[in-house]
Amino acid sequence: MKEYHILNGDCLKDQLQNLDAEKIVFRECLVEGNTQGNSLEEILGNRFSFFEKEYYVTAEEYHQKSILEISKITQVEEEAKVYLWFENDLFCQVNFWFAIHTLFQLEKNISVFLVSSIKDSWMGFGALNYDELLQSFENKKELSKTNQEMLAKMWMGFQKSDWTELRTNAKKLNSKIGQIEAVVEAHIERFPTDKKYGRPEESIQKIMQDLDDPSFPNVFRAFCKTEGIYGFGDSQVKRIMEKIN
Image (cartoon, rainbow, N blue to C red; front, top):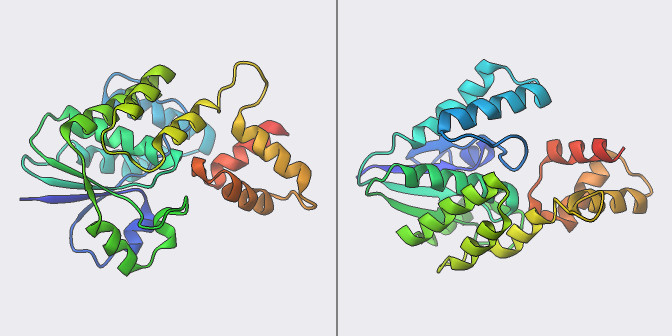
């Protein structure tokens, strides 16, 4: 029975370099940019256009780093066990929903497990040592077909900006994943209808006003501390600061 470990990035891959297993590194940040498309190929094509425009990524870079790895998910064998190492913040959850959706579309008889950090914080796997990562793996949670379907539908709700579908399917999960309902609300609060800025922009704006030195490193640290639920990296925070300025 073949086993696959889908990891949420290269840092985790480095942390698990002693783990003798087939690893798939999910290199994406679906939480921002164009996620439209009715097929994997169309979605990844739109993702490349976004990265090319916003981050000057070349076609070869995106193909090697992202497309080849994500395509491996579609090649998971029948009867396999798949372990998804994803954290609870919005950044990781959106990638996780997409990975689950991709697996669910295969319609194969596979066992799917979620591996989450044993520490109750937004720091995720980065705050763990190797032994703690192995303990996290021991505490893995098998996802029923019903939960897989709900999570796959959450990707579709995210893709369509359908807040009702996101909220409904988060509530339907019979095995709760972290603070998933709070994460959904944090995402919805990014797009207010009654004011100029969403929650991340307002948080960063306040941080910049309160800090004596509102340089990027200081703003980034403060945002990660107060809004860890988003899981944004430096690229996302820089883009928000540029938008505000």
